Amino acid sequence: MEKVVQKPSTGMILGKFMPPHLGHQYLIDFARSRADHLTIIVGTLEKEPIPGRLRFEWVRELYPDLRVVHLTDENPSEPHEHPRFWDIWTASLRRILPDGVDYVFTSENYGDELARRLGARHVLVDLARARVHVSATMIRERPYDNWQYIPECARPYFVKRVVIIGPESTGKTTLACKLAEHYNTVWVPEFAREYLDMKDAPCELSDIPRFVEGQIESEEQRARKANRVLFCDTDVITTAVWSDYLFNECPDWIKQKADERTYDLYLLTDIDVPWVVDPQRFCPEERDYFLKRFRRELESRNRPYTIISGSYDERLQRAICAVDALFIR
Image (cartoon, rainbow, N blue to C red; front, side, top):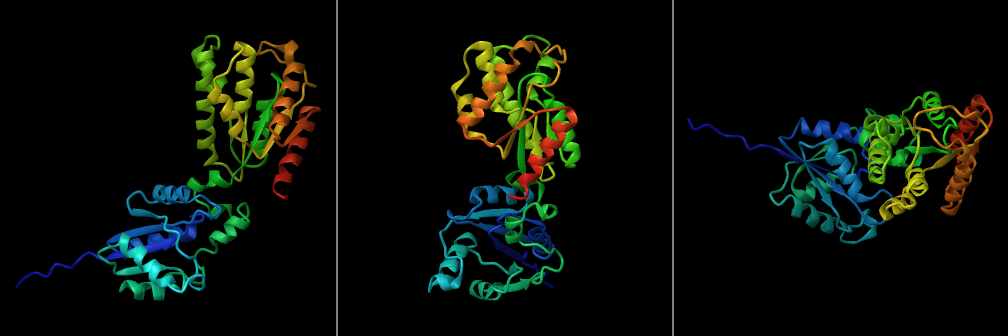
């Protein structure tokens, strides 16, 4: 008797993933357990609030072992938007799936008609959102109330970023650490300090680009672990200011990066605390200059900042009030 070889089953999921969340992951995990080959199609439009390329990269990172396709056709979003809505979408999907598909997995009622058009079977998964009570709309409207549903790769897009800048010996690192503890989150240490400790030699102009690259990389990695807010113990503006002060020059690309890279809030630490001797501090008489310089740099870029002064306890409380305001605007 001739052995019958069963053809591997194929399935597809279509979504905007704006952003991807645990509900999407439940749907994908359900589908991959029932189809031998699963294709995830990330459909995006230019006008949508979260960049399509970013969403595609998020899904691809979440599911590196699956086929993830970025569909950028400017198709209508709803049937009432175009009389040939279904024909348009069928053509786009057949281009991606020229051999057809066995199953269409969705959590929406539109899946019945979509599957019929593709000659497939619709598998409806958790229409009532009973398994994972969240939607992308809920996350976009209230991301911090739905933080637990956002996967790590997408969190940096939503996280509030607060940078602490100021002259030497004004409690920046202490404040960053205390704030992270208060908000049950993480903070980003000053990369330059760690770098110079390892180097065990004076700072040189050639070190400046390494400071910037290392600080940005550290920040992006920590942003994935942040709980709604991330505290940064310095930024590119600070590095550019110090480059000008120490070497009378700063690479143009770093100046441009200082203009481009923004934060939700800047905490500018005042000089009304005693100087504390440290091997990497050497300008006690210049603290007033740096305070004025940082303030000028922030105001020239129209950056939102709050001056943090007073005792260390008062500074912490002022900073907490300023950060809390970020979440009620």
